Image (tube, rainbow, N blue to C red; front, top):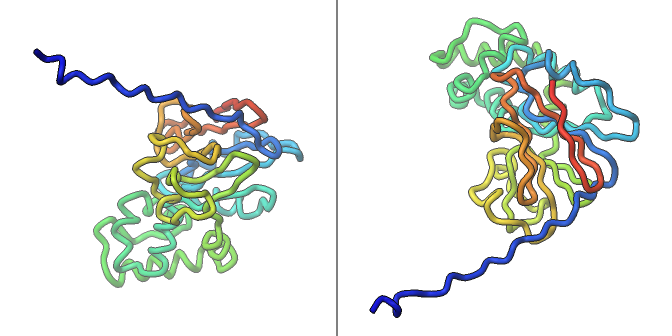
Length: 242
């Protein structure tokens, strides 16, 4: 009597992903979050290997100034913008409206690393504006411009490097900035049709994950003391830790 309610389940074919095929070896470093002590432990890469930092270089850790100044002086290293760099820029542009959010998410530690004090998560109005002016002065125009012009993605062969994620239905070049900085609800759930692998940070994982065309390497360095780097090669990936 129940036969008419039964329906054969649909068979969903297993999605096949092409092997990783970057144009050359790439070392991707996850979210640093002010942990210059960990970043400095990575050995220098060979001239034939491209190094890329996946954003969120600032906030939460105590050494954001050292991280930014060092990476800005390494022209051969590609650094992407993360949502925390974006929040810092929004604070500089509009401290009264954007200050509370940034300070709550690690901005206080970044200010302190640049020698800026006298503010808290409850600071308002003139105090935030003074902090912004001090930060602007401490960073200097060159470093500020470097941060403001950080790219939001980089590709090599069939591998795309982003901070947070990508809409699987949109080409990497046409992604919205918010998606690249904050992620997308279908990222990692819906496979991409263009065969691109995505290497990203932003979402903390206990250990690096490689699954369904996605490589996740944010291991929460600011809290765990574990900064992860992924070496992406033709057909393979390996992980190292600082």
